[in-house]
Length: 141
Figure 1 (cartoon, rainbow, N blue to C red):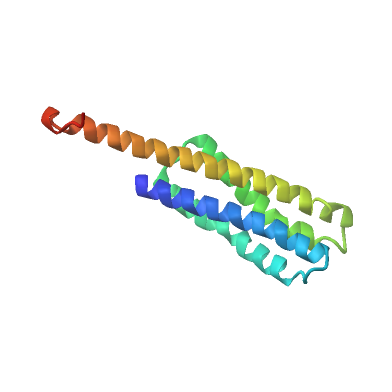
Figure 2: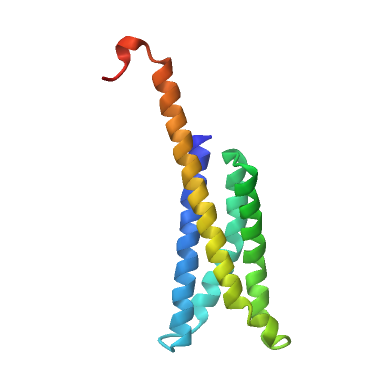
């Protein structure tokens, strides 16, 4: 379980880093430093990342709240490109694209933080269990 939680935490922080890079790439396009292609391409890549997180969450066996946050993150991430695609037909709806990006960032941060805490807790629990199982002569001073 510890290895699963470590893998999930690493993937969650990587996803959060991708979200931060995505905001930077939006700035690149917005301020005409470059085009929007990198933002669009990374956005499609990030759109499938919560599926990987969901798969990694199964062996990690998180609590209900962390799982709920992950489901919310998955939904918000799937909605994100649809909001951008609505710019021609429903520009007011499309205006929620950056607002939803804030939600994706916040949820990704919460999931990554909770995953790290769970991984640390599993590591601390394993070390305490290992020390308890060790004979007294093998205990560290």
